[in-house]
Length: 209
View 1 (spheres, rainbow, N blue to C red):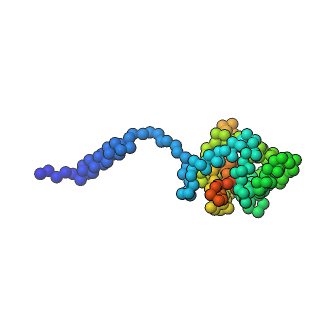
View 2: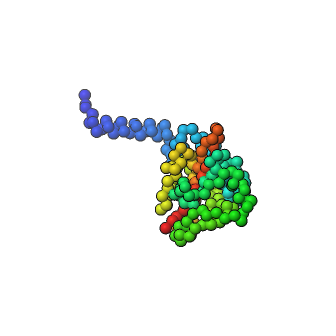
View 3: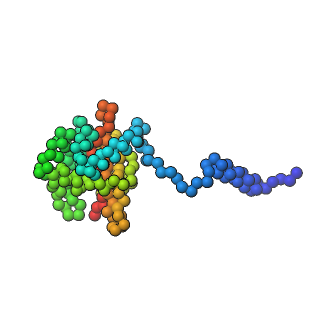
């Protein structure tokens, strides 16, 4: 009886394993992109993404009243100009205040300090929504749930401030003209209340100095 070389047996086993792998998986050179799965097992990705998309589209079209019912009934909605959330300084509006100041469009609010210039951004709510939040920028953005695709110089403390919340990020990667330096992100943060999810924060992120 001839004894087989151990290396020869290893090659046969490896070849058989590879053949089995191809038989079970197929020879594929591309992958199907699926929505990002949230880390919270109680989150239904499709429902959360659809609610976030509804809010983004309302912001993009200027139909701001359409998101009043999405605002948290007791917490209201907080606006953060940059990735770094300032819990005690960022503007917060209840549902009633949000609807009121959409109509009283001459009343101006101080939203925060502009990066680079140090000047304060002082403008009415509708103008802030149109010029700073800029929902139309994210019409064809990359959407992810509980995951960040965008990262800039500004400290991102969303998960520290909203530890039990879920968020949807809309990421615009920027233009070729500016080599992607004009990227922006819109993050919508949600909390559950009486069995439903409501908007508690609108956070913008972009390239900073």
